[in-house]
Image 1 (cartoon, rainbow, N blue to C red):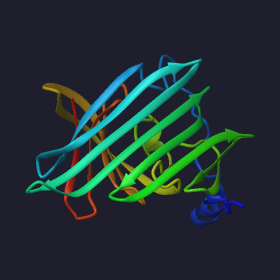
Image 2: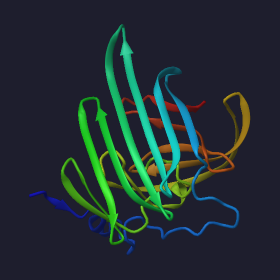
Image 3: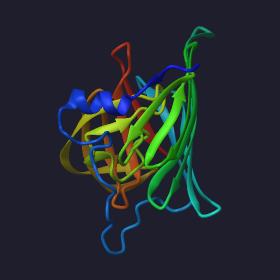
Image 4: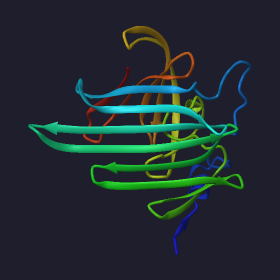
Amino acid sequence: MKKRVDFGRRRALTVMTGAAVGMISRPSPAAGIDLVPPEGAWRFLVLRHGNVIGEHRFDFSRRNGDFVVEVAIDIAVDLLGITLFRFTHRAEEVWRDGWLQSLITATDDDGTLWRVKSERSGGVLRGTVNDVAFDVSGFVVPASLWHRDTPKTQVLFGTIDGRTKVVKAENLGEETLSVAGQARQTRHFRLTGEIERDVWYGADCDIAKVTFPARDGSLITLERQ
């Protein structure tokens, strides 16, 4: 029998906000604003100390009326022909009527394997992470960062380990970045807490750039192509 862990209930008690995990209700888009990106792809080079160590890709599509997000990350740090660190991640998010309907991920974090399978049922995202069951209630925003409500929520759902992460977003204002050789006006947000990321979003809330600290203290940059 699979062990069941109610991450949603545990996190609600930990955060002491009185709200369900997700911490935000389903957003109401302003007139003319789409909640999801158009169909297509975002591709990023992954840089460490200015050297390319991998690729991070988002693919957005429609399937039978659902909005589908596929994420692929491939990273390898080599030295003198020897691979010192390897990370691969595959994820599929299925969104229906603005809600996360299902999330399936497979991750190899330098030999540590994670498998997340989940589906919304009765208003609750139910699933397993490495065969341990969990429930997450409320409006769920994954930690994949692409969703426009990422800076608005206090809790993100970890797509690697299937755990809810308490975060705080700080708006650092507008910045002009060079993205794929063109000047882009962006808004810089800093996420702190259980996830640490600096994310620059474009006018359409597409990701222009991401930076974050690696476990060894080096700075990782996702550079949009």
